[in-house]
Image 1: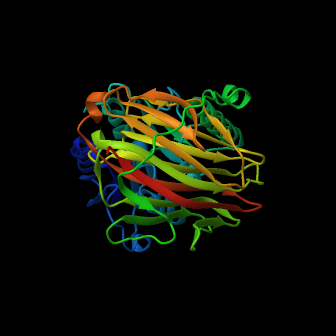
Image 2: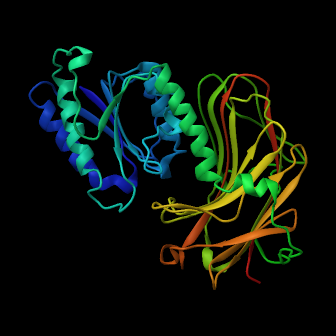
Length: 406
């Protein structure tokens, strides 16, 4: 039996436990071959492999892993019989992350774990349930009538019908607003304005025009997608234009800096962009400019830019494995015109001020300073588009400036 096992580097302590379950359960019935990969693995010719089962341990830090995208695409195309996925609870709720939406119509074995108190054995209870489901997969038993079925443990078999699909979509949409933009409504009605302006930046680590991308020393450029089409890129003398036409299931364009810089010397991060309106009400799009710690990408500062039909919203947030905190209230902006956002960092207080078009909108403080101080960081630019069935999508990236303390 061939098995594909995706385990993030942060979960390496669980590799041995999963492999032990697989070998102990499978030894009596079949020879076992397990291919173990992580978010940095390069998967070649995955489509020619014949896996009987795929096991995935998912964490928010690998949401945009190229190898995970390829595995989800493989599941959708090849449909291996065993599909076992460990997922974190989001706000205490059992929600399927968007990366798995293309395969939610399949029967999945889902094991939800809590991110709070992220200890080495945080998957222990779910591994017990996984062992039960794996043994049933290896040696299937007759299926009881629906009225007699019972279920114990933290595992759920998800054969998604219309009701559950509708519930998932509602949870995703409400969660996107409630989790990412908890104060968006208040901000749209009465944004906070003052006469404060960002300090002038004189010393730069990086000044990017996006007229072309240096993929040898400056950036790693990546395209991921499931479904029919991907996001298209056009480099010009004015900007990098991203565009897409239907049908888009889930597509990502991403830039990660190849260099890193010391966080305690950062002065400001600024970026200029323009987004078009989203005419398809079912489509979802997010443009992200941010930074993350080189040592642990789960600690990050992201500015999420969301377009709608009439206007857009931008909000920056500080993320860690335990929580996500909004830096300021969500700020509205006009679509179809150029905007410049600036984040100013104070290394003494670990506070960040947010400006849009040189207008101050508030500030926030990094709480878990002990995880951030003296660390280095990398930059990331990401555009994600989902469920585009009509209309079109486009945005322009004009510039990015990374300034350090003079």
